[in-house]
Amino acid sequence: MKKIIKSVIAFLLAVLLLTNSTKAQTLPSIGNETAAQKEKRLQWWSDARFGMFIHWGLYALPARHEWVKNKERLTNEDYQKYFDQFNPDHFEPKKWAKEAKAAGMKYVVMTTKHHEGFCLFDSKFTDYKATKTQAKRDLVKEYVDAFRAEGIKIGFYYSLIDWHHPNFTVDKNHPQRLSKENDTAYERLNKGKDIAKYRKYLYNQVTELMSNYGKVDILWLDFSYPGKNGKSKDDWGSIELLKQVRKLQPGIIVNNRLNLEAYADGADFVTPEQVSPKKLEAYKGKTWETCQTFSGSWGYYRDENSWKTHRQLLDLLITSTANGGNLILNVGPTAKGEFDYRANNALDSISIWMQANNKSIYQCTFAPDTYETPVNQKLTYNPTTKRLYLHLYDYPSTGTLVLPNYVGKIKYAQLLNDYSEVKMADNGKDLVISLPAKKPNYEIPVVELILK
Ligand code: GLC
Image (cartoon, rainbow, N blue to C red):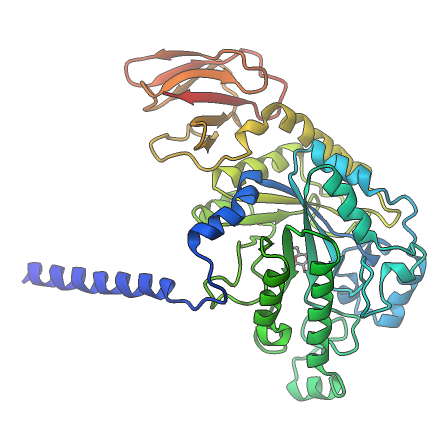
């Protein structure tokens, strides 16, 4: 009897597994790219592992969060003073590009428009743009030229949300939202607003961005919030929008916030936002990029003082690589047009580490299962060169470290920062490596293990 029950359960489980896996495969597609073609298109991005996010807009003036218009329920009139004052006379994107390059960032994504609706680029479809401020010029154009000159791939963030546009209907995230979620009151509030007109505006602007700046490598659209008094794919016209983007920029890589989860190719990568290193481990096996701030806010926030430490930032980068994902680290430049000293200090310290250790990041991913990660340390792996990178989070005070089950697998070991030999010994069962008694002068030193 027990046997019969067991085989019935096994049968049911098999049916369940089968239906689930066919479900995943049968999601409809918008385009007709194969998995191999997608992998090839994303190759440079996966190899890069590290990018810079830039959130810059009028919110840099109040300097108290890029959602300030929402948080303080400001009207367009309240907010107008920031447009009138906007004058970033220290804006020199070449400096930004040099900082990014030195820190080892291979791509950049800047806000061309954030939720406030202000456009840093010259758009035919609005006057709410940089060219109409004291800046008097297309700041996106200068950004593109500067970063491209440093060999950094270019990305545009574009906010689907727009708290300035007259036809963007008031919803639960809008500065003029209602205190109580009352449908009929929302209807009254939105009388005369036509979301179809906004949809056209957004389509036109994304078309401009995809047409007027040469090759764009990444598009970051932000964001959908389906459900009651929210907005989703039909509000944005997500399918048409994505088709247009792919038509104009065939190689482009697009994030996952268009609310196209029901399509196999509705996004190229997932975007865990401000997720802890521990929680990032759950993304292993997916195509992903975690976006992170230095201090909590994306836009410049003068009085925010809880900045991440050098070690925390390194941990995010190493943990992302060690789980097969990317890190895009955000800078919120000031209204003057500069990275503030805290951002520069953070970037400088990353650049020192990266210049010595970047081989453990670029083109790397998680290590094969056969290599156990020693307690408290982290491993990355380059599948092309067949090298393992042991990140010493916890530097052994004895100078020796035991690598369980590594015997017979390692040809040579060296410190990554100076290629000095790390001696190995076999204690009969495990491999024991001897490290310098004095910790190398890097927050997290790396040992390169060359496999046989
Ligand atoms: C969020 C926020 C936003 C930020 C973004 C970055 O969706 O609305 O301010 O731009 O995430 O991931």
